[in-house]
Length: 592
Image 1 (cartoon, helix red, strand yellow):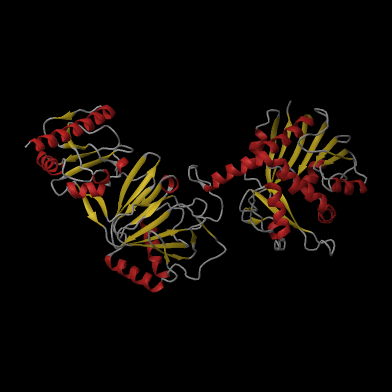
Image 2 (cartoon, helix red, strand yellow):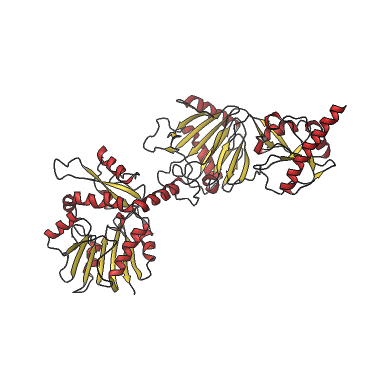
């Protein structure tokens, strides 16, 4: 009897100590009398208590309406359906259940209220998440499973599941898809009925027919780690069809958690915020916590489950409004940071040095003035002074004789070409023009500013042009456009004969060594897939240099980007903005 009293006293001490911790952290007081609310005083998320394990045992003794697991806490709460249930659970688990950390006994206590925190197991879908229940029939489910069994090959037995890809392989080491390497195993045409049905039931999606399918087979106890599908790899939305069994999928955004049941035969649509900003995953366990028809929580054992995840390749950078997991925006920020510190090195290695080496060949290919540039030059009155900033081989310096034309460039070899044409020239950087303020009537900047590696350097070049203009003076600026099609018509750049890159290993290494990072190498005569790129120039002017390829740095401009840059200047007005053969163009006038 003495030993029994000692044991009871020890249990009470531990119970009281745990009650004090809960009261201090939540402001709640324990109750001496039975209530519907029970606190598990010494086990919770921080001790490794698994909710399904706790619920499975507690449900043996009573009906539970709510299980409240608190993040980073060593305690949790049960709200029972009635007093009888709570008393049965208390009497059978208090100081009896060994679900505590390392098999320790659990200590339970009655409380009058639950803590005022958001339910950890909130089941409201994240914004943009839609579940279409019973999207397919029982017969269709059987046919799809049979079809997958016939078409599967080269399965990838991963740690958490068995994976098969159709259309394109998802590369888990890089979390990307290579659009240039399609698989011979295409998405079966027998699944096309899904997209016809989806379009009839759910309007307004960006796309309906996928080109990539990943089939996951989950054995009992398997899951998939929390993740966000790579933004730049796939368009919005993403579809997932559940077969064979229900499962609870966990969604998380910072401290928000949502546990969503995906019923078998349902189609999950993840779009917008739920696709881009919430991680989703399935915990590796043999049972799930679900809500019964009467609202009580229960444990449901898992069975084998098959999911079909349908996606459509993006093949370009992501332009979503969600930055947290956006690989395009993260990479863009990293690139901008690198550019800020290495901008002059990039321009020196991949602009200035390159143009000095290709100057003679460049001159052979640049001889016909662009009509709208010529029209701008001809608009100046007799005696006007026109400065061509980045004059290249000087093709715009001798169009008319009634004005004074002066050219400047950073490339000494191109200036030598200009000298043979008896042009007025000097060497300088467009970021610092050695002319007095308000000293020229007009400026040209044709295909120059897109060679500057940061937005601030591009803006500085515009500031210099505006500075040297007289009040009322005008400047014409051309930059290469990322979009090389307008009104469904290809630019002259795309219409010209396609040539391969044929890049030699030496050239690639020179770029990497010089800049300590990599940029995508553009395939000539194709649409641009990124804004900051290296464009190949292949020399053809001698046998010795026949196979030499040089890479020029470009920042190709999005629509309105040049206009927005000009609007940052407070001393100019944009007189005209237009698109001309794959270039964005503006005419600005100095107003003060």
